[in-house]
Image 1 (cartoon, rainbow, N blue to C red):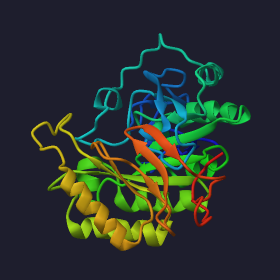
Image 2: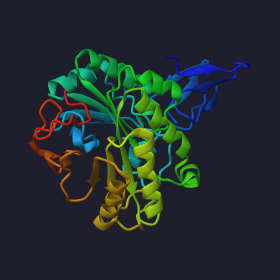
Image 3: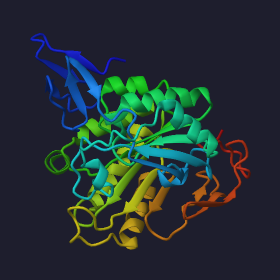
Image 4: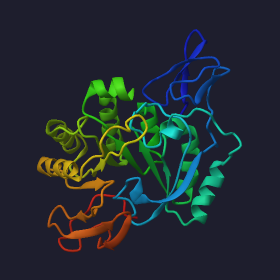
Length: 330
């Protein structure tokens, strides 16, 4: 796809990477700080310049229903199109200074993943939509080498990018950060309806989707908000879509806010189960992230932290009742 469109007066271009649709004049950058109008074309300034590259368990993304127990080569750049005050990677996401001394080509990134025995590549740490041209070039090569591709995102991709992603992205973990439109717009600098639309579109495109909500007490943890989020996931995405409820810890601009209690996550999980969701997992707390069969409640996968201690799936099915378990298992 073409990542921008020209404006009739030729003095600006419209970035098509995310839903901010930044109108960028010559020599300027969009809200993300890393996509620039250079001679009337969109230049991705972080292309080939990652600032974080690690080997992670795929469960850390978190992705629980794709190749459990496997490793993902994970990387990110500087920059973001949101301004979340609780960001845990704020030192890179809110940074616009690019270290051009770091150069990793798409070919080198894929080769590194293979050398390290990874089964997937995850585009993560900051918002990958803002380095989509780089991510896609890596991803297309990875796909040829039979590696999976995982997007870990705030869900503000443009419809054009979502359509394009379907050709190479296998799975995405999308943040559903709040159920308050004003909070999304004023505090996060995003949009709730846009994120909901992204989630629907990704599911419709056949991308395996998991949803994460960072629960912050007093901000987004009311029974009503949790229930409505759960009902949205069930009714608009499907009851099989995994929901990760994770604990907030003080960071960035919210250092004076209390860490989320385990009881808050357990309350949210119960509300989600009552709404009819099959797979709900708790994160950033010392509990098992087990997967049970929605039909017979058989233990299928036992997770202790990010380690898989038991995996009883048989070709993607429950060994007891033979129900097919939703996910990407091979």
